Length: 435
Image (cartoon, rainbow, N blue to C red):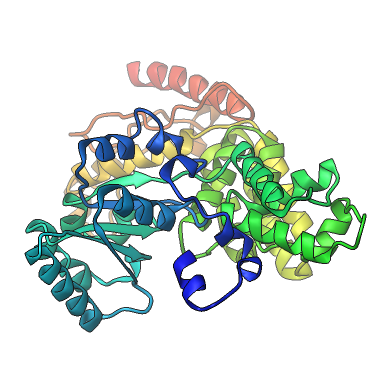
């Protein structure tokens, strides 16, 4: 990238800060020590002097492109870069032909493919022959889960290396390097500096871009507080794609926070999703799902509250209706938890698949015809409301199955009362069946 700016005649001072701070060696890449440390996977490859094809999987701004370029320098491979967004089959053929020519001259090509997940399956298959014969070392970069976005044949020939989001320490280190380059401190107070790091959401390129905006906006001797920072940078939109991993990661975090009875974490993830423009209908559906999956009959009101929150949002809209979601999230997170109905239903579904051809016992079947009456349909059925305690204790499972117990409520919340009823009916059933 530096070479592109230089060849275009762009002065150093006019290049973006993130580009001016682009690492010039693998040792300068921060935040990926699990790959570049003494025992890191990339360190070992470089020491061996041989690279295999790889898929770099990680969020934006974690150094995937820079790492690929530096790897080619370390191993003296020719570096070629394409983007799946702008390239098609014809472009790939040209790249492969050039790589074959280079291979004939004794030099291998490191082909870096940005956003490789955007290639369709047939395009991904086109890489296989040139990977297998050593024409190219493929390094693909993706922000999406390779298990879902890349085909199995490609994955079997490449190692997936996970790039991590920058933590606060590595983002702070980037800011210190930027201050050293600029020769002046970032004009932010302590809280605003922490807020800027939070806005970057683990993206190294973003934290430098935000810092550059702050330097541009600051007048002489001006230092921004958090409110001033937000006003100056107009708040960066969260990294979030409702159709991709960010969407599923956050809803998973919200669901697990509710399940784990942590209302504060649940509110945080709810707020992030709302802030990112998540579809409120999706959130409403997920709240209902949490109520029936993780709370169930431990608190029957949970489902009522979740449905009411969905209806309240429909009635109020945004932003007023968001408070209804917040109320529901706190209620669900603080409710007693039980997955007994969820577990029972899964077990009953399995039993239904395994025993789907068995008829119910004849005594609980109606006999609308004379033939069915003659066959004993309905014989011996006892109407529970006519029995003592409105309970007959009859068996209702198919005879070949015998009795099964799918629902086993815990001794928590409202299910404590259900447990008492089930125990009472179990004792009555034993007594009635002895007679």
